[in-house]
Length: 237
Image 1: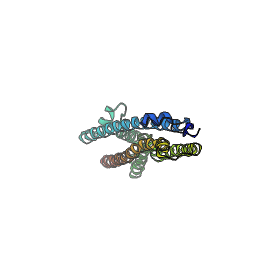
Image 2: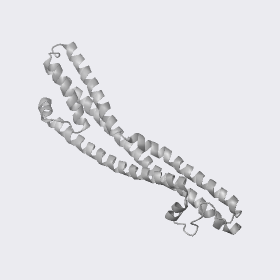
Image 3: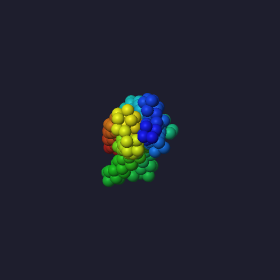
Image 4: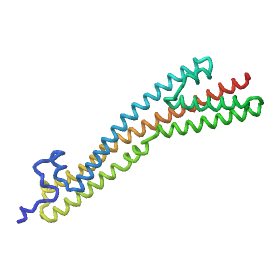
């Protein structure tokens, strides 16, 4: 009778492959691993999307900086931009709109007026940079959450599987390695899947945080150069 009692999680003891261990897990174990696999797939898709977008942003920023410094007139450059297609252009357009509005209202006639306009343009640039950076940082919180939470979800699946294994050992009254090993291996598979989801998310989050920080500093430097250029134009009036 004892030999006929099967240890929980050891039904597929003859098949110790990953698919065999997954098939032998119960509903909770399957739900944990499937959920982690779906998170992993979404994470990789997000990683590729972020890599593409950041590469495009850096390329467009380089091209626009070249146009900015080679342009003979900021007004001519502004007139050529019908719709900003990257954050750096958005910063430039926001500043030029404020500049033209102040110029049309005659606010640049006095030194005090020029100072107020320059301060207002600076605020507009900072607000625009903040808004554009918030868009760039979309889904970064998700990557951070996956990197920190996925291992614990996998650990939950492992603890659940080990509990089932111990219950099965008590029922079978057999502690041989052949009986215990499949259940333990099945339980540890959940932790492995959790790490598969967490490790790429952690690496991607660290890399993207660095790249986004550099791009943000690039926008800040451009805004400072833009303000300096406008300041020179004000002095010439």
